[in-house]
Length: 117
Image (cartoon, rainbow, N blue to C red; front, side):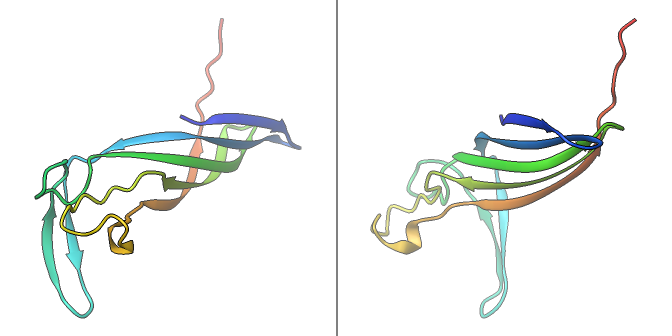
């Protein structure tokens, strides 16, 4: 959920926003390439055999522009705030056990405007 600020522009509005994000990991696969190759199933949970914690809490920031025609363009960045690694065999202070997701996003779209009669 982002909190948005819209500032008037020449042909539309500038958009700036930030907010929290919560994600839940259901499952997945990891593909490894480079020196070693392979594929593994990723287990989510809090048990000793689970690789990743299922709940991820993140922060999101975005900037963009919405034209009066309904076309919009946004760029966003999301970074997880909690460590999602769940391997109890390694020391918690080991940098190899500190895993965070982050991504950049690009959104181009069209808002369908409704009119009231």
